[in-house]
Image (tube, rainbow, N blue to C red; front, side, top):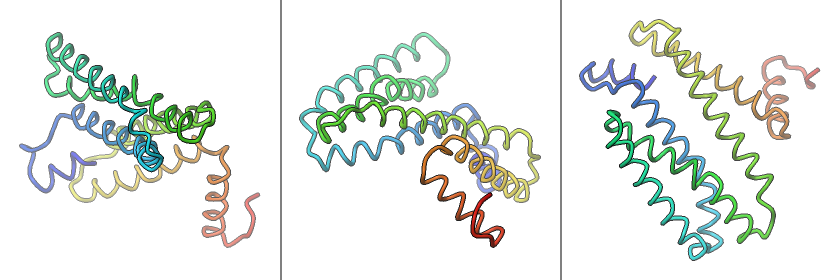
Length: 187
């Protein structure tokens, strides 16, 4: 949808390759998923315990990015992939583990399972958006609106399927059912 908007507003000369836009969106998603862990780490004062994580993350990011740049023809995509790989290899497990072990003095097993589910849901959402982008016709502003509506419906389905076992999602479904039908209970 971002590509369609840029094409309509600024012209086709400013449109990035689809793969580059996809990697930017995945990087943004991973950054947003990290914010809760980083906020708790800051609130709990875990800066000293996170000192090595930052060095390892920077080393993995730099090493992976440089290797991809020199060994492939990916260009800027190599740097974006290096960032994604460093997020998955280092931040994905290390930040929740630090927050729960040193901040809350609890096991990080359950939060890591949920964090994995969030990453899988993010991948599912990216897949839904890609399918909407490919299947729906590009008809200017109308196509942009249809792609947005299709993405919202797809996102809702992926979200409900991925998190249907959680109490919050069941409550949300009950509220949505009540709003759509006027009935009190979901049968």
